[in-house]
Amino acid sequence: MLPRTRSGRIAYIDLFAGPGRYKNGKSSTPLLILESAIRDSDPRMRQMLVTMFNDKDEENVRSLQKAISEIEGIEKLTYQPQVMNQEIGSELVKRFESVKFVPTLFFVDPWGYKGLSLRLINSVLKDWGCDCIFFFNYNRINMGVNNDYVLTHMEALLGPEIREVLRPKLAGLSPQEREATIIEAISEALVEMGGKYVLPFRFKDERGNRTSHHLIFVSKNVLGYGIMKGIMAKESSEENQGVATFEYTPATQNQPLLFELLRPLDDLKGLLLGKYKGRTMTMREIFEDHNVGTPYVEANYKTVLCQMEEEGLVIANPPASHRRMMNGKRTFADATKVTFI
View 1 (tube, rainbow, N blue to C red):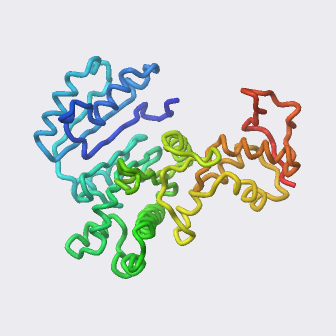
View 2 (cartoon, rainbow, N blue to C red):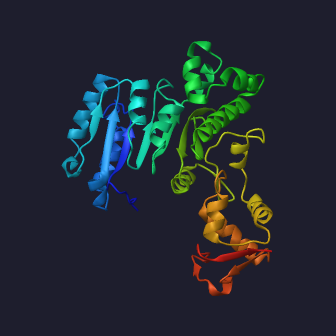
């Protein structure tokens, strides 16, 4: 479903776009975005989408422009792609800060960390309907945290308290604990900046025993958070009792955001009973109020509420006997009222 916007436009911005095609012939992200928009069954996508791509490498820009011009049906887009050749720095950030963006998905994928900053993310995130996904190169950032030579870059990304707060925390930690602490630090910095909803997704190397990188989603809107959470859950390589792992960093209670994201489904009953005892709410109200900062998606709540109804822990209205079956399971509609006993 396409969002409603006063301007009738939505946007996708990629400031580290790379070439049109990689050496192995695979399409880069900009091409995949444009090709998907052209194929979309809803013609409004072609009418609404505004795209901006940038790369500091002139050869990449030429390659991208050529590849875009060769896309079949590119002329069907009302707004033709804009391709820029700029170094990402303070001047571009100031420009973005002065612009009011239409609803935008902002993708930031630098090779390392140069150019990536909290201020850059917030320059787009500040406006309604704008979300950001950025590539968090953990290995490069892990090496940079204790390196005074790149301290300015680290402070721009993780906040100004690197020396006083983060470095002492990291001393003596195991590699797993160190990673969890750094991911928690960037998550906290994003929340303090105003990015109310943060979701990190971890990628491991081919052997599955080391982290290669993270993609981190940040939004000020619970709807965007819910949509991305569903996508990340679906793309997770593993599930525990139907709850997606999100490939999150192994965490402890010392990292509260990450710890909450690792709770299994068995815990959800107790969490709901503890928070909503004696209250009556709809399923949708429960989900929207509770799911933020947890790994649970809508289907998990419906499953658990059905179980709780069978166990006499909640009273549902309409009751199970009046709700239809689907694929052998009792449905639990958004408007179903739940009273916690």
